[in-house]
Image (cartoon, rainbow over all chains, first blue to last red; front, side, top):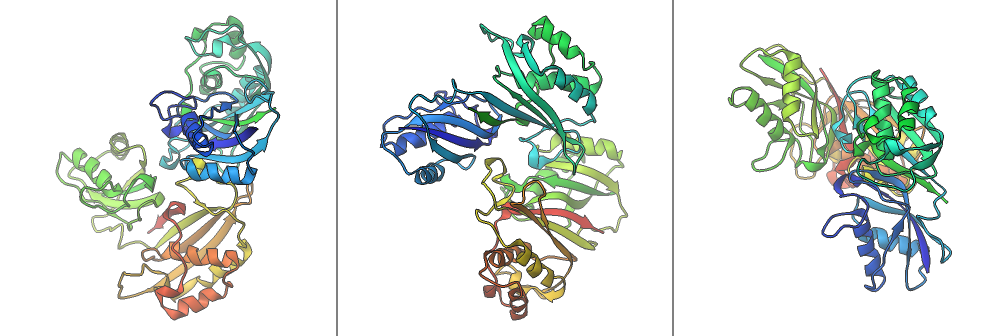
Length: 246
Length: 246
């Protein structure tokens, strides 16, 4: 019986999503719980993709197989009662036996939160604290240039080799909080993302916002296909996997 | 030289505001830093009042004396650089030598956050998770009854004896989040508060919101001046000291 689970987590206390021996990871915690509910027969979960240490998720998705057929509501309640408080299952559905939570992804949406105003200790792990105003309109202009299909080699993790660096960005947006104009949320939806890609895009956007680069520079960086040409990787704490689409 | 400091904190990792031997408290952390900056001569801070374990503050205020005259901007920077990341100084002002951050308080504002929608692990320590809809309009009606001057004995901590239980509530409000109607914020401003008073008021409001009590019942509870007549103490995590007025 294959199940698809939608879940959220606070990534601040974890060494990332992916399973690692003797490490506190999101996958470890969930597999422990599912294995327990599966009469101690090992259950593996397959997520839409991993998230790095400190990155959060509002609606991550993963599939897994269980021996018996569960009432979905009861299964959700059982998992949540055993999970730590910083991981939460929102929904469980039955899916076809050949459904795959990673290979079947059509699109993913990430959001990145920046606070340009006064530092708030309440949000220290949940937003990137940037202590000065940024030129948000110029950042939005730069962001629009990455929409479409491009080679994103300049925006990947420096030591990671890939066969294919081409990805398609479907839509982007910068939302300004109406109650607090110092808070912005960068939204990026695409068919696929490589490691550090969103945080490296945000890193360049911040340099644009600082006036160190022009919005059009992002096109040059894309064309160069060279990781040393982009900016700093923005911190993990501002990043959220917001949704996964099939 | 007397200074008045405005500061915010995430109370979730602390045993409350007030100094206690061998405990991690907000006051302990700040006094340690100020003593260091005062050439290791002991500095005591006097806050507008304490907050309990798990309670947060957006704008708490405290006064203290330092030997030398500091540039306020440098002092603020020095304190923040030495404080843990979950306490943050927002402002420091010079005040008269007879100013007292507790005795001179004219009013204080508390807010209490409730989420009636889906549980969010990101906010587990920052909002009271209530898993069903509440009758917010009826709650607001109940809240309005506590405005004015009343004996609040029914709403204090059960084992605490006071000479005087009369306090004045200046204004109240329940704000519904426009983006997410499942989120409400209860605002209570008054000239003074006793221990657990806000959380006990919220406890009764929740019973009103559940339909277990009518809004007018809050008047009966006030009149009875009996702690056993009010409801449960609402959890600490939803409570914030929002502001202090002099």
